[in-house]
Length: 76
Image (cartoon, rainbow, N blue to C red; front, side, top):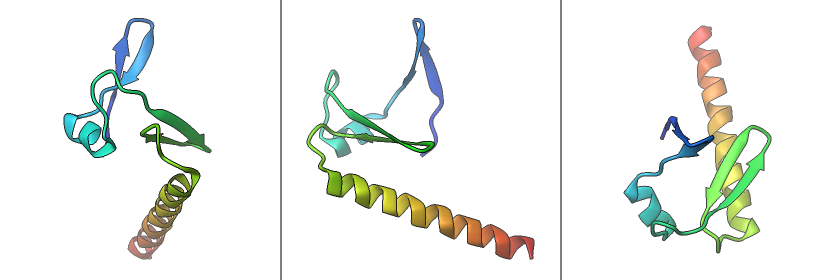
């Protein structure tokens, strides 16, 4: 999912769809944890443990690797 940042006063915000909030088990006004790894931002519910974060990173790494390989094939 690709989202645009929204200006909120002097800051910038990321507006999340209701469906995403529901998947995270969040309600308006709920808290999230932000994890920055390299150039990747991971947003989790407050109860997510390190194992789940590592699983998310592993998924993103494999997805990026597949996209890189597909691009190589397309360029060949």
